[in-house]
Image 1: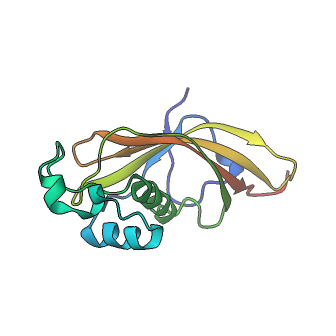
Image 2 (image 1 turned 60 degrees about the horizontal axis):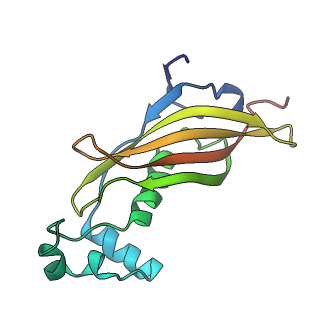
Image 3 (image 1 turned 90 degrees about the vertical axis):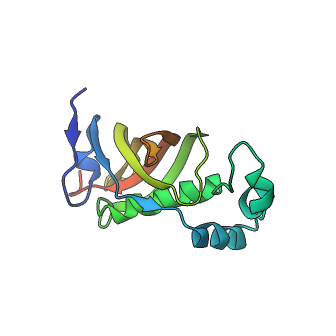
Length: 157
């Protein structure tokens, strides 16, 4: 497998080769993120909202929602500029695993690597499979799985 870093600009289906990879920008998970996500999702579980309870827990403080972190990763990928012109849709999230907690104040980024691509019936697009690792400021993988993204071709086949 050839290792190649994806340069600036969009990732087109035509250019998606196994081994192509990039890192997103980083983002710190804030109190506002957790409160906002609890409001939007309706998930007000005490592990996210009760500081006193969580102070006595093995974590010592509140946890960010796992689904919030997954959502932030979709935004970090979007901010990369690699999908500005080429994305049709996020088609699937596969085998997503929550490996370690993310705390308020943690900073996350994603490492994305193309692991496959396949044609679809429409000749102007295809599916690209990426292995996505969410990494915190201590270089620990906190979440991981695969994103399947439908991307346009640069030109029709």
